[in-house]
Image 1 (tube, rainbow, N blue to C red):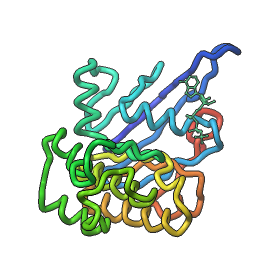
Image 2 (image 1 turned 180 degrees about the vertical axis):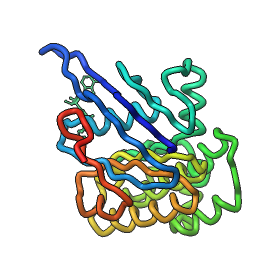
Image 3 (image 1 turned 60 degrees about the vertical axis):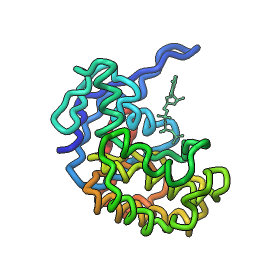
Image 4 (image 1 turned 180 degrees about the horizontal axis):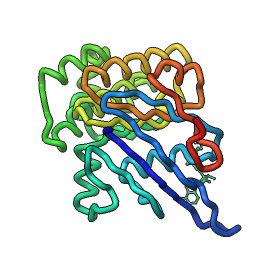
Length: 219
Ligand SMILES: Nc1ncnc2c1ncn2[C@@H]1O[C@H](COP(=O)(O)OP(=O)(O)OP(=O)(O)O)[C@@H](O)[C@H]1O
C-alpha cells in the first residue's frame, strides 16, 4: 500500500462545541491506484485529504505513507513529506502568480529534487501548454490554469496525488478532458490518486470509489 489510514479520528471545536468529523477511518490506497472519495457536503472529504497530505494532524489513529508513519514526523520531516511524497491539486489552482507557466510547471519538481526535463517536456505537450509557457497564470483561462496545476504536480512524480474537486469549477466537457489527462498522466508518472469529487460520473472513471458517511468509509 502506498497510503494506509487506520482508526483515524478528527474533531473540530466550534461555538456549538466539539464536532467529530472523522470517527474511525480505515482506507488503503495501493501504489498507482486511482480512488474516488465521495460523500455529502460536510462529510469530511477535504479534512481527510488534508490529513493524508500532512497539512493537518489526526487526533488519533495512524497514517502510513510509503512505509512512513506520519504521526512520528516533526515539523521538518512533515515539510519534506509535503515536498516529495504528495502532490496536491485543488479546485483553486494555487499557481504562483509571479512565475511564468514554464516556471510554475518546474517549481515542485525542482523543490523535490526530481526535475526531469524530458518528462516535463512530455507533460507540457500532453497538456497542450506549449504555446503558453511564457504567459503568467492570470493570462490563462480556468481550464488552462488547471492544466498547469496538474503539470506542476505531476512534474515532480509524487507517489501520491491528492486532488480536491480538481475539475469543480470547469465546464463539464473541459472538466472531463482535464480529468482524463490527469488519470492518464498520473498512470505514466506511476502516481496513485485519491480524488474528491461530487460527481459519480467522474468517480466511475477511476479504479475504485469509496463513500465517506457518518465519519466512516461506508463502502
Ligand atoms: N478548521 C476547521 N475548524 C472547524 N470546523 C471545520 C474546519 N475545517 C472543516 N470544518 C468542518 O468540518 C466539516 C467537514 O468539512 P470538510 O471540508 O472536510 O467537508 P467536505 O466533505 O470536504 O465538504 P464539501 O463537499 O462541502 O467540500 C464541516 O462541517 C466543516 O464546517
